[in-house]
Image (tube, rainbow, N blue to C red):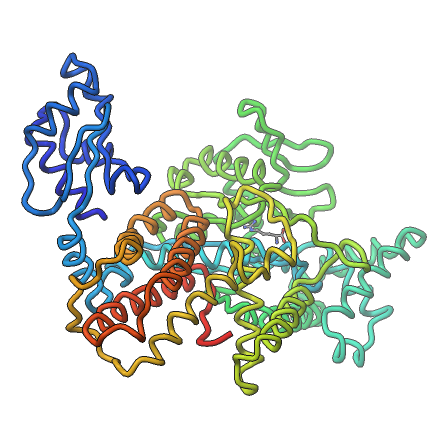
Length: 560
Ligand code: ARG
């Protein structure tokens, strides 16, 4: 609708000298559809014009001049309400959607955005709550890529730290090659848990673990080889999950990347900011900022998460000269990322302002009989199995495609469920809602898409390029056209707020309009020219849903 907003703003700016066209553009609202397509509130003009807003709206309406873009321009109280002329609307619609211009990614900006997401800790299965960082980070990456940025999709694995000393000890004592082959990281988890039980009574274990990790840090070949094995096995298993989810990375680089530069980093920090030794540990006090201190090095000499993140932030700036640097990490680490930024700022790095923590709420309501540790892979498989049951019940999908469709629907349900409300909210996990084929859910939108595609398949008309859209006269058709034209504004809003629910909501509102369309409008029974016009519209509905879902990281299916 930007085009029509623009026309209205230009025309207003001819009458209102104290505001620029762009300022006027900002003021234009999209009101309740019954009131108009666009509305201009006159409150802000009252001071300048020294008149009541409802007087101003009346006077302005008299003066405004348009071609044939608007069918009605009326003063309603303090507002000017505008209806767009259908023929102008349809002409514009055809123009924007020819070759799907409006749905194409924006021109490249040649600007980099590194984004840190998923970032699980190795040597244990990915827990279900990691779904949030994975899915939000992936979708945010798609969104910024769409608007022209070059994304550096980083999986910053938790692959360094004293726990690997413990795991090495555990593996030497209780590990089994056979079980490692069969169970993969679940076996590593088992022996790690055993370590914790045993180490309560046997104090020598911790000392041994420290020794082993020190060896790893010092580059001892054998120790490193074992660590590398844990890492390789983990990555292989993680990739299996990312494949199910359809999530991709361009950089798999964990905390271990910074192991070789940790001492330098600490020296650099010391040379730029005030550090202290507190109870044997090296810290950066942040009293002035009213924050707890940042721990750089523990008493036993072990470096910490924060130290590695400082090194990583600098490294990312040096490599990517980023326009923004994003971290999709839960709200529990909010204070931590504030500290990280403060430290980088104190070190004199102005680019620290470009760092943004894309924070989000927790996963709630997901537990199993086994307790708190719910594995992501199990939940995905469950979602796929449940979708499969539903799809089998409906009987519309050919046998050979069922598994692939079930994957797309099951995974889509979880991704949509995660992204459908503001990320700050907790993700309230509820199977019923996620898989509700007729609610605010992924399957509902995917299903809406399949209905549209099925009509397109059934018609003999396959080429709609020269459709005469002026034949679209039903209210629901016009409503759909207006909704589809909102696509660029929705993208913009989502990107400005780093919020994906704008896109989820949008795909849902198109789907709801489509439900109405099916109730009132016939396509296949309409005479050929009208049929062609309607098919043009439907094909654009399908393309818009598909583009929107694909940014969210959700695939469409042809049948379900
Ligand atoms: N590995 C961490 C965890 O599982 C998340 C890392 C987030 N990224 C970062 N740069 N600190 O909690």
